[in-house]
Length: 436
Ligand code: C2O
Ligand code: CU
Image (tube, rainbow, N blue to C red):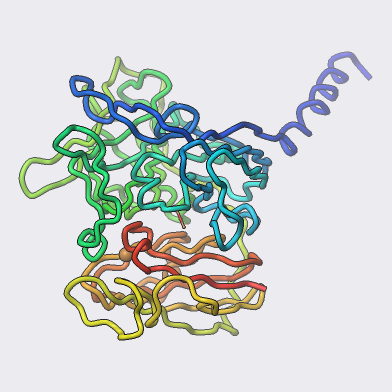
């Protein structure tokens, strides 16, 4: 063997196992923090965060890699971490009372799982989430493709709102029943938290990973100063990239965008309003990239998924009910519910045999929109023309609307199905299902 060949072979031997068996191992400590939520001329105030900040650290790993996290709870209230959108082991799903015991303050829990899908995910508290997420217990979880798309910057953008009291601190009315019976706890200040690692130039190609981490607010978002496509929704690549206009993210939903910077001043994330558009955040540009040649935006590589068994589909209905201004079943024991029941009951919504394909009609019989999230699986949104649409983990259903989803229940365990408007979840809009 020639020396050069040997070197190539040796380095391949060293590198290859690292790529497929690497472990990202770290501690995630939930603790009180002081955070600068408002612009820097206003005082910082007390929040909760992970490892000293809210949002918590951006966790990044490669597709197929093992994530190994020791979670330590120091917030003075029980907690647990849910890895939103990861089709992982049930025991690692982070739902106290369903998949694990609550992690009391002072205790820890070890989360270890492989991330089967590349994409944009996030992690957040799943105990008293309407309070703990509002206080800042969340962060991005990025699973990189083994062959990432060719871009100049990979930028995570978390979009949130906060309710700030007249004293200028985070308002403490987390269990406000009026909020819960309506659209949830809306903030009075909203902002995009943009994680740029290097200066951005005109003509750069960007990958933007937008995550709506707000407890209850739906964000329509206009992107100013770029031209491009939505290439993934809820972490899953779209077979055909979509237009970026008209983008709407319900709580917990994500969109990956690949776009070229066309402006010479800034890129803006804008919340359209009837009056002046509200700028959630912006990236100031520095100079021009003259090396970036124009090229098409291609779809991302697909994540492997089971194929639906279209000859043996079972049909189920999930009716959302309750809330202000609408009639509800007398059997509801809380403000909201599904199919006449509030909260988690002994019997699951349904027990599926592993691998079963189900079409679930989600009927919104209320006066409010709901973003319904299924744990441990993604599902196809069935489009108006009957075709299978995006493969998502959270679907937004507007008042009076019915959304059908098609899901292959192939991940064994007990999984939560709930509204991700966390104030609605707090007030009964949740159930669970079982895959045996
Ligand atoms: Cu993002 Cu049940 O959660
Ligand atoms: Cu809801």
